[in-house]
Length: 174
Image 1 (cartoon, rainbow, N blue to C red):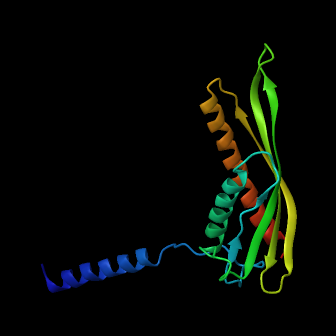
Image 2: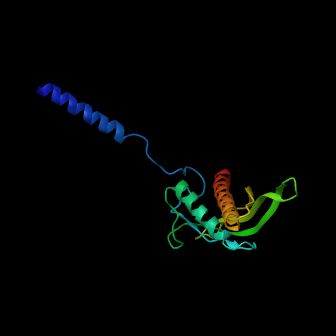
Image 3: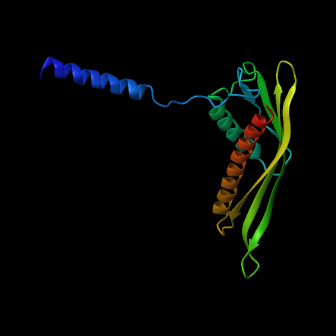
């Protein structure tokens, strides 16, 4: 192999390394709104005023995931965060929405309503407060374990959508 050819190949490899190394990379989505210049947000476990135990934990997990994704990992403990996201699970309802020809329930609609508040922890100023309701239809199953799994999956989907909507509402305010 000649020296010219070796330098050409090394140059091509260096160029490829630069091109691949400078490609798309992850960067936080925050560009405006109260969290744009913030140190971070503390997502507090919502109080649960519904009859459904544990729904607040599912919601908290989805909120943390959403805000971690949108802020580039700026969900922090209370002593390090500038903002606090807190709220209340106001209600959870489960209503039949479709029936078989013999009047047996075929599907339920799970409905979750929450009230959320974003506030500055130092100034104690409320930046946003609102109520959000989401719903998800899920099938009935004769096996109670599978029925419970379907309801849990519906609650998880609802919680994810509520988390996304809260993020969107925060962006709309600014």
